[in-house]
Length: 61
Image 1 (spheres, rainbow, N blue to C red):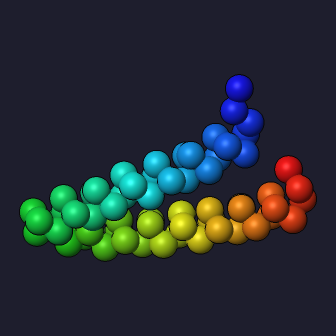
Image 2 (image 1 turned 90 degrees about the vertical axis):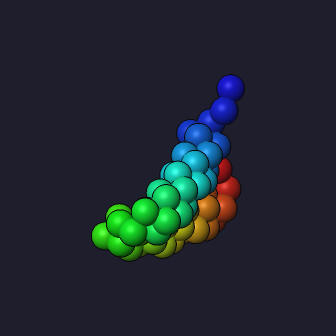
């Protein structure tokens, strides 16, 4: 059974992949507001994932 840590990491990776697809789709369909929003979300979720992983590593969970 996966722990909350594993679920969190999987969720962050899945979210980044979905936003990357949305960025590609919105760029090819000239929907630039969605494109920029997707890029912003990728950066924020990526930053959150890095900080979460560092905190988990620090706490030895």
